[in-house]
Length: 401
Image (tube, rainbow, N blue to C red):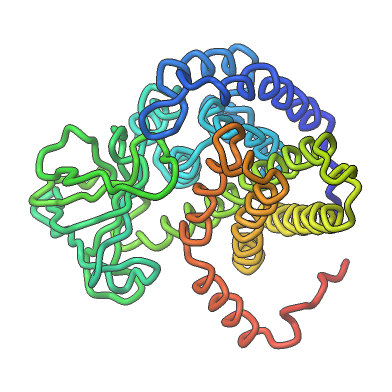
């Protein structure tokens, strides 16, 4: 494993860092830059997106033929971390969830016609998208075998009926990827479909209130009552919905971690800056051993997370699935983000608990990290499954041929 980055990736990272410092960090202290759900306001976002396009920092994750810069996963790890030094960063570069994962799966599995119809408008920033999979009890969540939403063939169409919830971005999405049951086959019983928000036969019943700041479009509950989807809007093939899901969710979990590392580093930065100037009882906070231990531990945990993310990215780039590597990164970085925000608030005292910094925003946002794209416990079960199957080989290094 060689984590030396290319000169091209280093240039992109530096450009992103300059963009974030110059254009985005100042917006965080401007109340008018926020919408009512505590994300960047859409008019401000569009201005920042235009700047990012003009500077060649747009959609870095896609191939050039699809409007991107062709970064591999290792390059994405470097650049996404730099983007999320600001809470507003990923959306401005068209690298935020859920569009990020949806674009990558459409690029990987869509037909040429599907890419032109469904991918290109997202890549151009003209529309947003959502991935509709999770259902309320007794439907499917982490266990897709429990899925109750059905798609029944009717001639050349499929008719969808069912119930989904916590669908991120649905409130502003135009393009949807929907997972529904098409048979009772344990392995080939799910199919992924593409549909547009204007198609009849479905509705958003509510935008679910959450404890933290929201992605654009929120987290919504959806009802399907006779939505008709033509068979040309099937992604991959009938019965291959779990393949679509695996292709999307693995890299999406990893890109979450890439972005969260940027936020964790920002928390440390804010804590360091305050500790360097704040004095108590004649001593700077930065000179107190307890504060030094807190910051040193965070630095170590962040670097551990970066190595886990890089190993997973490297494994994907060389053709592997990186399932256990992604699960390790997801568990560690999700918990790290919450800890980084918590420690930084503690060091900042009442200032950290106030809205004079973005720490309280990050703290509320961070709690969802241990739930989205698989709860900690699910990923630990996955790791145990690998351990049971591989035994001592779970830890084995690859050997050069």
